[in-house]
Image (cartoon, rainbow, N blue to C red; front, side, top):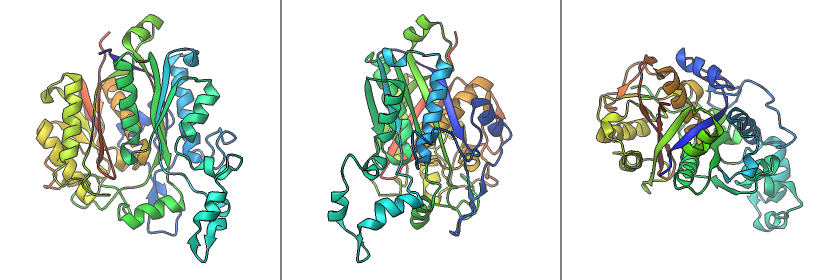
Length: 403
């Protein structure tokens, strides 16, 4: 297998719009939530601070796509790949549900109501390529438009696997490059459900905290919704060396699994999560004891944190440092694995393991070495976990590159 380097990274998050700003928030254990300004029972959301990100002309009425597009262009710029579209290149992106705006309700939903119910016939009549509504809600729209704008003619893929989407898209890019089927890849994830339908959906599921996200804490009661994007340029080592570029880190392993246990709840003992981590270790050729830190999925939900803790204990033991950054930047849903991958790269570069904002008293049901505050410690290998509804599980291993 070919070694896969990360040579470019772009970020849009509530913690900052560059790796330095993002890392500074992690270094100081900063809470990045703001007032939700919603009539719903939600106090905080983690929102990207700029009211306009740019590229609204490319993606009108779709905030998550403007976040992803900005991050993608930054990643390509940092990688110095001016001819990405002329290489053996691929694009894999994790994306989320459509960001339905009030205007879209008027255009896409209300006209199809008949006696208070959706009419399949009137919706079918609108499924025409010359109308904006079908295209606006197709999951592959972002990757397709991104490819068009940068002139990419190669393979594109969209992963729609809930909160594991970005991590699974990154795993696809890693495996494709490691097999030698492409030279470079643009991968990552983007999402924004910071809108009435998004908030209401998670409230109905009982997943949102009415106040603070407290991963692994005895008082945890759900997550804070976030938004953002992170995109990465991956390259085969030999290709990057030939260009004379230095890596930020490397992806050395990836593993995925599916619980098929429950629509929203994980396996109570984290069996699927454990399998994803074991598979990532096997691909990387690493022993459990070589993992120096786990960036947990850590949503702050009562069931999720226990299941993940049991999985980590089973695979890696109880001593490895563990933390979740969702208390700081919120749960960015389909983008979570990408932004947390960026946190792993920052940790490797700066020898600092992020803390867990919101963690005060660890729940004894979570048998892990959870970090409350950042820890200055050099590690060689990091596992980043992402788990989604329906039992979707993905684990990525980020490693230091010694040149």
